Length: 495
Image (cartoon, rainbow, N blue to C red; front, side):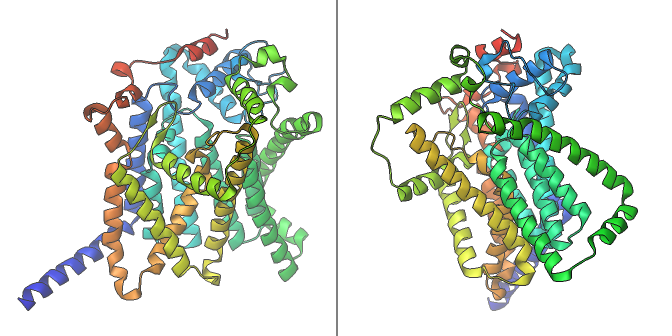
C-alpha cells in the first residue's frame, strides 16, 4: 500500500513539474494571446453594434471625421451636436486615426465597422504582448508573468471591450508601452529610453483625458529616477547624447520628429483649452449654444443631475463609498457592464473574491522592499496610486451629481490592471513556502480553468445561446446582420 502511494506521489510530482514547464514557456504565452484573440474576435463579430459602452458615440465621431475633415482639426461644427463638442474635444486621436482607416472601406458600407472592431482586437492583443515584455524586462519568472496575463485575458469585460470600437483599447496599449519604457528607464537611464517614454506619454494624453493622472504618475517616477541617476553618477550629458546619437541616429531622428509633432498637438489642444476655458476638457456650452448642446445626451443628463444634486444634503461616508467602489469595480470587470448588463454566476463571483483575497494576503505576507524587486514595486505603486486617483475622481463625481456609479466602470482601471495582475502573480508565488512551491502548478491550473470556463466568451456564448436566461440573447447580432440604433444612423448621415 505504501509503495502504491509513493508511486502516486511520484506521478503527481512529475505531472506538476511538466505543468510548471508548460506554464513557464513562451509557447504558453502565445496560447494565451491566441485564445484572447479568438474570444475578442467572437465578441467583435457577434455583439450588436451600440451595445459596448459608448460605441455609438465613438462611431459617430469617426463618421464625422470621415465626412467632414481629412485633418484632425475641426474648427466649425455645424451638425452632429448629439456627439457634443468636437472642435475642442481633447481625446480625438483614436477617432481621427480610425476615420482614416474607415475612408477607403466605404465600399463595404456598414460592414466596415466589423473591420474596425477587428483592428481593435489587434490593438488589445498588442497590449497583452507589451505587458508580457514588461514582465520580461523586470526579469520575472515567465510563469508568473503568464499567470497575470491569463487572468487579464479571461476577464469578461476586458475581452468584451477588446472586440468593440472604443478608445479604451488604444489607451491600454499606450499605457502598457509607457510602463515598458519606464521599466527600461529604471534599468538604464539614457536619452533614447527617456525620449521614447515622453513620446508615448504625449500620445496617451491625446487619446483620453483619464490618461492625465497616469501620465503624471509615470512621469513623476521617471523624473525621480533620472534625477537620482544624475545626482549619483554626475554624467557628462553632452557626451552621453553625442554617443547615443552616433549609435542610433535614425531612431533619434524619428523619435525627435514624432515627439515634436505630438508636443504641438498637445499644445494646440490641451494648453490652448486651459488657457481659454480653464479646463483641458471643455464643456459643450462653453463652445456652442445651450440649445445645440441639449442634443448631447451626456450634457443633458449631467446638467439635470447637477441641478438635483444641489438639493440633496445627504451623502454617504467616504469609507462606505470606498467599499462600494471596490465592489462595483470588481463586478464591472468580471461581468459585461455596457448598454446592457450581463451578470455572471454567483459561484464565479465567489471565486473572484477568493482570488483577490488571496492576492491581498500574499502582498501582506510576501511584500518586502528588496532591491531586486524595486522595478516591480515602482510600477505596482504607480498602478495602485492610479486606482486611488480614480476612486477620488469618482467620489468627487458622486458629490457633484449625487449619483453613485456615474462614470464608475471597471474598464477605467484597465490601463493598470495588467500590471496589478502580474504583480499579484509574483507575490502569490512568493508567499508559498519553499517546500510547497511545487503546488504552484496545480493552483495555477485550477485558476486557469475557472477563469477560462466562467470568465470569458465561452461562458457568455453558452448562456447567450443555450442558457435560457432572459435578455442575454439580446446582446447578439440578429442572424449576424448589422445593427445600429436610430441615434447612430442619424450620426452616420450627418443629420
